[in-house]
Image (tube, rainbow, N blue to C red; front, side):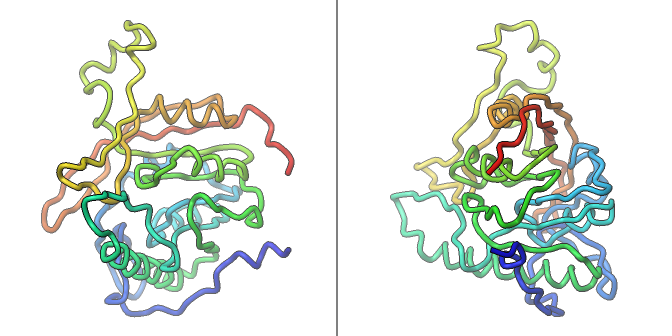
Length: 275
């Protein structure tokens, strides 16, 4: 099968009202378009200060494409991957309510995210490619990549390990995983003392977020520690890794706030299995 068969055809979208922007972005012809998150100052830290020059990259969860287009400017050939409105979001299946209306709302939301990607793609003259699907069904026809980015995605999927396994089965060199920090494990003042504790106590946990009493959150499953992510990717052949911390700027209505995040950069140490 030709590898080009999995890539989506470009769409012509020009109306901002048909779009939803997850990330703030500067666009020729449109100016500054604000989103829920503004990574412009912190994007290199968000991506672990990895060099993308000459690299083929698989980016999971591109949303409106800000991270994709940044990596492209840095010299990468990017394959963006995301849901389309033909796939369902991994919604928490609370037995206490009928989720059908919420799923329909999510599909409308995803369609506007897809539109935003194509509007930005056209405005920026991007050469990046798009593949649509869920994280458990990443097609091998994409081909091998040098780097995979899995940023602010795993908290939203039911099976984060399987999502990583699918992406890393195509990844030759490096994986970048970014998630919110400070929700599990030790608070910041105690981080320096972790090395004094037994490993069983020092390893911070994986936290299951949904609460049946509040029926929230509906689309967030987990909070991770860096150690959990390092163990995940180590099992998958990326035994060498580094952790860094940084702050990114969020927006809720008119309220702006910093969110502490961590980034794990993993390097393949076990040869990629031949298919």
